Image: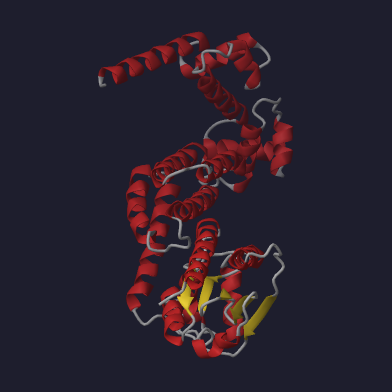
Length: 419
């Protein structure tokens, strides 16, 4: 029968570990386990935490945990840069934090691991899949958590408990998981990603969203965080990056992309639920598709693209053909001829179209005066602005604004009628 002092010790250890686990798993996204200090218990724990990893480095025999001392933090790392932190507790218990890697597993990281361990390039996909299922965490953050755990465990105020680093340098072979279905799953995910990005790049929002629904179910099993919301945020951040790169490939100038991408990154981090992130992902897809539909210049030559981007970015300024040509790296005459050949319009006509298009957007805002809008889009003369606007839109700016307001009122009234 267990005496009162032993019960108190067990309860204290359990309480201290639960506090440490909450911090490590929720904030650092690293698994935490409290296991018996026995061969079978530890081997079972490691097998659960490293299901795709067939190596002797973290076997019970290799760890030599029987020689571990209490009140020390053991940082274990093997030649594949996979890490654990183990703390020996009273009563023959072990607190196991990990596995984790301390660096984002990008292509350079995977290539380094392959080079160091003489792994065939045919196993790159397996190694990448393995790394992408591991959380990424700084050593210092986990060491700090382990030290706080020890101080709570023993009721000591000091926090500078010794860190013992153990590197297992024995060369071993990384063995890919036998089940080929995992490889097929990885291949299918990349196929879906490429199909999704192709539809986005082509401006097909409906098909892109349909494919993304399938992609969501495929990536749901690739969890790199124990917190479901944090895990989904990580996936949404990846989506934002993929979409941004996709828009860049469609020859949309970064001027149009940067603010949208930054805003979405902010929205992702401040989302509080998977439902919010789900809605945000579809909004991101639609927004980036519209960006491509509106600003893609991929059908034009690099010179004409440079000229168009210069015009759009400097729409509020005075735009002279000589300045645009200089920014494009050609003479004014050459630019004028090439621009007309590729677009069917003169440079000045294109400038007016873009200025009036922007003005039409701004006219939907009732509070901005027409004169202010004219000045904003590069017209210093209100009468000239009105003439150009009428020529392109078929009506003066005041009438255009009136129609926009009437349309907004009609749409709003129809929406109320459906409630």
